[in-house]
Length: 161
Length: 161
DNA sequence: CATACATCGTTAGTGCCACTAACGCAACCG
DNA sequence: CGGTTGCGTTAGTGGCACTAACGATGTATG
Image 1: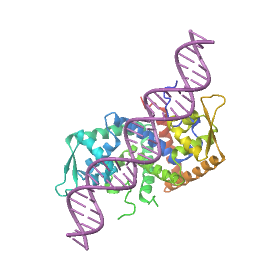
Image 2: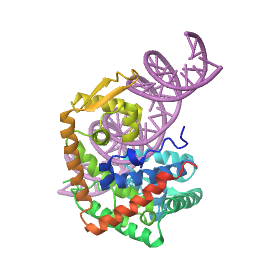
Image 3: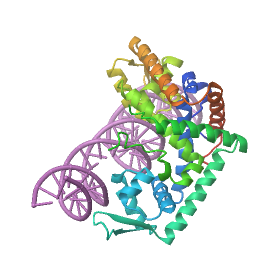
Image 4: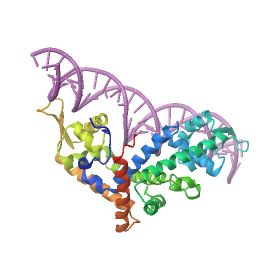
């Protein structure tokens, strides 16, 4: 009975060759694993990626309507509702009506929220360190730059076509 | 009214700085986009990633029981059932009892399945090309190698701890 | 040989993430 | 004033990853 029997990636001889050759598979695998490490770490303090995205957006740009927050964080307006409910329940944000436009809510971070985003930042920094452990500083920079270029390329084109 | 109003990544000034600095976010973004491009491409011919994983494993290693197939493809045994049902319905594989062990099924590819996996290979190659367009051949190799190392590192350790 | 244990396929259900559709209300625009 | 657009919200879908349990079948052990 193997200890880590549930290793789902890089099963060595078991992994089809074509998987190894395909970039999308490689990024996918790496991302999935990094995501899992990050997800587990966040889960350890009762958070999810959506929470971090929203809190980070608020920290970066200040109070916002839900629509603006959705655009900035990448969380859909429809999903944002529940996420905000949870963040309100945990005391990390406040949701109040916008006096200037009664359709809108204004979302503001509480002090606990400020502390929370710092906490999550630190956790995710730790995840990064853990994930990138085998690379030198220069290599990390290189990887960052290459991924950044691919990323910008994917974002800039109309890949919808 | 912008055409591609639903661009969810690299929204320029709208993207929080901390997102850009965090590696897991960058891989995540890149992978999500590559995944989407690949997913859309597969969807265009009525396939999903699970289908490809299974077919590729069969092509690489030949007929197998569902348990072996699950290990090789990374699809959970429980999810594999439905995937195989679909592949059988589409005529890409056959599922029969294993005479040597009545607990097992033997999964074999049909000729249509052989053609299908080649088709999907080609589609995913196209996706790769599209995604990696901005990089030179040398840079792709470099990116591949760096990701490969991170990936191997993540797979080899007990990250569960 | 009988009994305990492991393995196989399967069903059901959970949770995260991404996304669509529709609705009621408020604001803006001609 | 009336139509359109934007807002928050509810509901629902689908892919992916994973857990729990079960009945049937193998294997191993006493």
